[in-house]
Image (cartoon, rainbow, N blue to C red; front, side, top):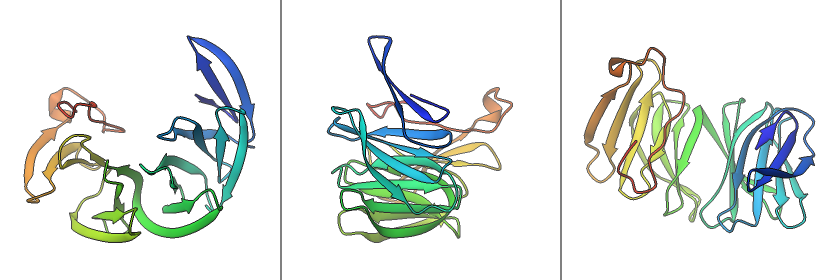
Length: 204
């Protein structure tokens, strides 16, 4: 967990380690798929990669011009994807410290599926798919102004409409809208800030 500029590691409901390295508030934390590393992103504009074994930062990545609000490892753990308040998504070859791709976005939320495909909303509000294996855009779909979230088991994606508090579930094979969920209609008075599928893909 992150609190101000330090990271807390927990084991069996007990805080075992407090790691300090960032100079400002930490906004995001993500484990690698191997479980041996984790990354953190901060208002100080940096991303740090930490070793769970040594409890030390082994790499610092600098490039964003504003704070970092989301980091994730690619499925292969080869890349770290970071998003910042500068409306950029960066793809890092983190072991070598190289920034290999800059993407301009309308919304800094993104999602990665089990085939290592990155989904994001570009600066023109198009849903865009970027293959992290070939490092290329593979598909651009219609206009959306929200956050994309892949279903972990099915070839579908959910996107929220920030202005209308509506969630659309889209079939990625056909492009058809499978379902439209009106959040405000379901007794919520606020806009949706975050959402996720259950691991079995059955519920949102």
